[in-house]
Length: 180
Image (cartoon, rainbow, N blue to C red):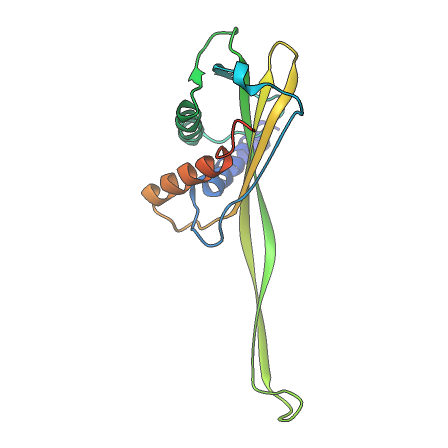
């Protein structure tokens, strides 16, 4: 049981590392956000990182990189990180990696006049990583904002490109925060 848990945790860690950092710019991130109607976001000035129960998390290095990238974006929005339980917002994230089959088909020649032709199809597996960022009002214990960034991943990207793409994804995710 312990060995199985360690193996699974290692696979999740590797997958998350690939999911969040190994990105190429083709295609772009798919980002969606939603907020609680009627929430006055102008009252939020400080935030505290919290863990979401049952969530999947990457290794310590990637966890730090993700949090620093988000911290940078939130600081540019005027929010200050604190360790105090009296923070205006509690923020947590979770990640997941899915693999999907993709078919690439190629054809040439043929058509109704010419008849025949050749075609070939090749199957490949692509990895898709998703990061979900949630913000909670600790006073009302309500989710007030959530965002999701999903991207097709390129495991061959170098470390600098991975960090650059993580930063771009978090910038895009938080572009319209706080909501108008």
